[in-house]
Image 1 (cartoon, rainbow, N blue to C red):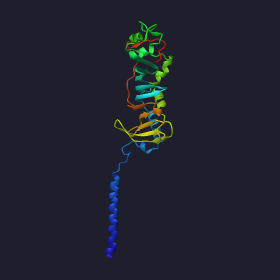
Image 2: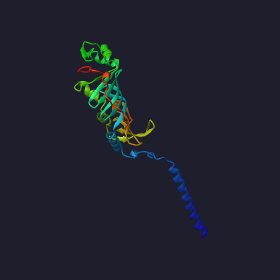
Image 3: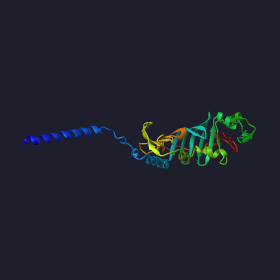
Image 4: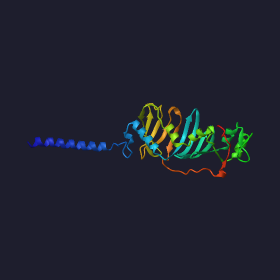
Length: 259
């Protein structure tokens, strides 16, 4: 009787030990969402919505990278917030600086920028700082130097240029994926863990990398159709916005030349 009792007991003990060992082994498998904000556990569409909600509540952001629109490539480095923005835009081979404070939009171009922009224009700043006719592109660049020009609100270029400084309009236009969203890889961007949300299985609708740490902000966007890749960072970091001083400005006149 004693032997009949001991064998089952030993088997139970062996089974318990095996289970304990298996539990230890399994505990060594890392949970991919451990230490994150938890959005990685959600469906792709829910992650996309979380990112959009985070964007809607953001007070500031910095946008850098390439944006392709209507066949034209723009390289951006813009700091944006709800009442304006500041930074640089490169188009073709020229770079210009934009500054918007409220509805007042200011433009500062490099000599090459003004040379190209005003080469075919019939008006340029005269000695008094207001528009004068008959100046060449080179003369325009010399007159403007390193000065800001205030873009008239009724100028055809105003809305196009303002778009680069409008946080809400720019992000709303960019952060839209095409196709049914699906979850992708989990890359680390500048030390921050993220999860990809792709527009379709083939990502033809673009790819959005959403932060898995803290607020689920979008940190990178690869636009559909190869239309550029943008990095979004410095979320919520305020920065000063101030209109240029009088000695930093020149009055171009009623119309800014189109570039």
